[in-house]
Image 1 (cartoon, rainbow over the protein chains, first blue to last red):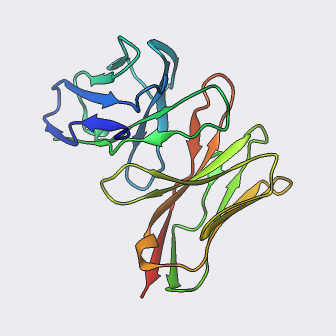
Image 2 (image 1 turned 45 degrees about the horizontal axis):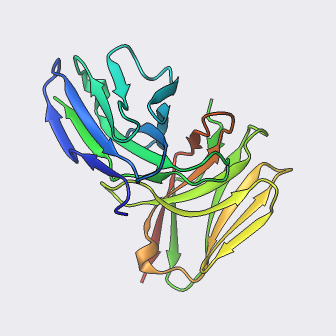
Length: 115
Length: 113
């Protein structure tokens, strides 16, 4: 088990372009989360998947953001028409089981810079 | 509304001494608390956790204390080592169907050799 992986680790794009990030959770973890972290802040929840179903979306997730987890394994987060305010670290986490005491394990993140 | 607060942005400690990082929360519905350690350009690494039904959990050099009546938790690191230098985040499990985490803003710990 190699942990949660994310790709790419870094992305620089111009304003108005679309970007897509990928997350591969720990195998057999059926719960997957996306968070966003900006400078000086803690990670903020964006969205949650249980298997392939997207069960919650934060109001931070504007219409330009879309996330999928088509087969209940890896997940993608797409940002359309990027804006400079989208510059942040995008973090993926996964956990196993239904107990509230299960730990979320994070990937290394994708750092996005929008010019 | 910041439901999880870490009021000390930074802390400097001498190697070998105790580091105490503090965290306050406002929502009494939080049922599980976690501490994560984060290095620059990396994702948060899980450190230690505590359920709301306990008041202490210990793992090696790390101990977390929970005071439910004060809505306060603290992380003690003894003895502190230079490799402990990182940003420490307190997180609370929101519970419900999602179990999303609510994070504080972090405390930068610097352990001086």
